[in-house]
Length: 311
Image (cartoon, rainbow, N blue to C red; front, side, top):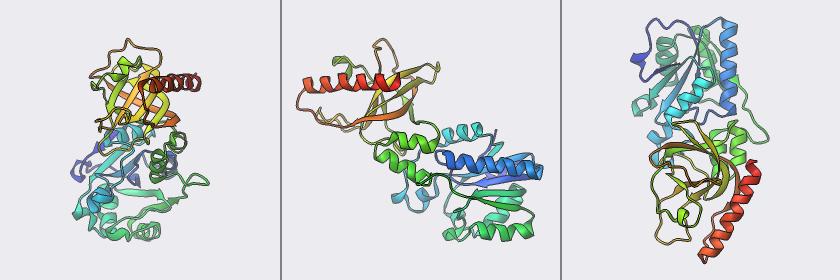
């Protein structure tokens, strides 16, 4: 898959394309449906390339940074998921206030016509674009009649709740990792490099691989989950009981972390290793215990339940 980080990167001899546009944060099942329709449109039009136009940073992070949503995927993960979905090329538009001021017609001419030579445009039925979100699917269709491209607005997927990045964020905020996984079409994951913690888990008999939660990324609500930890250097995957939060039983801890206890393993050396933690089911919320004994007893119960779920 080709990745273009600016309009200048797009080959001048690109040839005709089918284009789909959006943030594609999470590349969830709704996004995947749009991408499948883009591929079908490309086949119908005998066009060789499906091109995604996406934005980095998220437009809201530029226009209203105080309201910017936590991202479900960083830009690198988004590229991997788009490639797995069969996209031929991605134009990552470096979004800024100048681009935010483009009228819908300017966006159409500069991006779809001049840069990408679009013969087909496939977007979600609720797609909006241009200054003050003035453009919509109807405007795209009208423009396409004089600029040589056809337009398809794809009905939103899901039900009774429409699948969207916002819906998935809400699921995660509620600890509903199963609901997030249903909309994503895969478990929600967090990636990071394992750092050395306070080693209290090791002292209690549950050594954990600790990964700081993403600064600008989404993470499940504080609590304990059943899931899997995968080493990205070797591909090895292990069942795990996962804690998200700040360990309220111990005073003074403020950093929010994802702590994964690999079931029945105390021999893994993971410091400095990049891992991916997948969340499958919530076990319980975060609790502040009055003493260590109550905490350890509950942790043994968490591990038993995780083992049953992951069997």
